[in-house]
Structures are given as structure tokens and as C-alpha cells.
Image 1 (cartoon, rainbow, N blue to C red):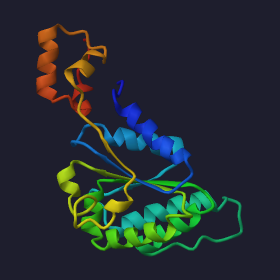
Image 2 (tube, one colour; image 1 turned 90 degrees about the vertical axis):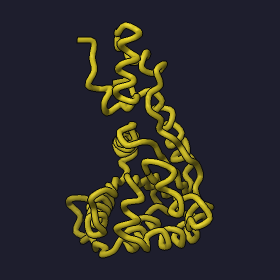
Image 3 (cartoon, one colour; image 1 turned 60 degrees about the vertical axis):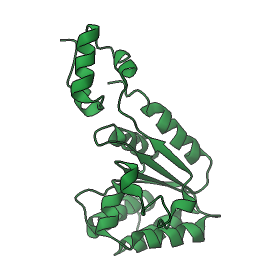
Length: 211
């Protein structure tokens, strides 16, 4: 399926990555609107580290980062051993430190769920961003379903990291005009019905075809 409108968001993020500076971007939109597609493209194109906030605890996130860092910095035939970290704070310290020499990208899918699992993480992230803001080349993409989920976590007076956010990017459901560009050769009324049933959400639209 042609993910209308998602390419522009991916390009915006890639432009920031190309700057070679630290950045913190927020990608938000309804559940099943295509945020995971954006994440998968960034992982594929930039070998980004992917953390799935939903249904994961701190040990899972730490294990994911350990595997990614070991694969990236320790060749398979190397004699050096990789010293794994034991907490999410230590993992991000390692990420920030390594990004001074080598650009890194990390995608946190469903950031609010990660904060629920590790409540102190926003404090650690704020401190690390402030410490490394002039030297790091770590690009962090935080994802959430809606702005209401971000209040106090990323935006609002109670947010610890809002001052460091470079850009907010919204992944919107397909509009009726977008639906027409997907190649669904339906009569106008039928296309409107598909749009009404799916709400324009790609995860549901993909089940319709010209057959």
C-alpha cells in the first residue's frame, strides 16, 4: 500500500539525522494510523534501535539495547568482550556516549508505556540531553497515540523534556482524497463507505482491494 503522507514525515526525520546533531522528535497519531510503518522505515534505513514501549518492562528494553550495541560495535571475530549494562539509565548513557563518535538513532514506540514501566526515565533523559546537547549525535524519536498521552510526559508545564523537542510530527489517517490516490477503483459512494468503515486508518484500509 502507498502510505500517503508518511514519506514526508520520514523525510523530515531523515533531514534531522543528516544534520549530524542531537535531536529529539515526537511522532504522534491514532492507533493503527501508520506510526509503526514510519518506525520500520527508520530502522531499515538507519539501523535504528527500536524499543517497543507496549507490553515491555525495563529488562526487555535494556536487553534490546545491549544486543544492538554489541552487534554494532563488537565485530563477530573480535577478541574484546562486550560489557552489558543493567539499567535503562545506563543503557542510554552508553547510547549518548557512543553517539559522540558515531551517529545513533533510537525509536521508542509508545513512549508513554515506557514511562509507565520506568517512571524515572524522563528525569534521566532530561539530564542526559542537557549534558550531551553540544556533543551528541543521538537522534531520538518518541512515538505516542495522541497529544493527550504526552501531557506531562513530553508537552505541558510538567514536562521535563519539552524544551529539548525539535519537532512534533503528526501521522494522520487517510483523508477521502488520500483514499482516491490509493488505487481503489470503487464507485464514489462505495469509496465513501470504505472511508466511513475504516476511519481512514491504514491498518484497516489495507484489507480492501479492487477484487
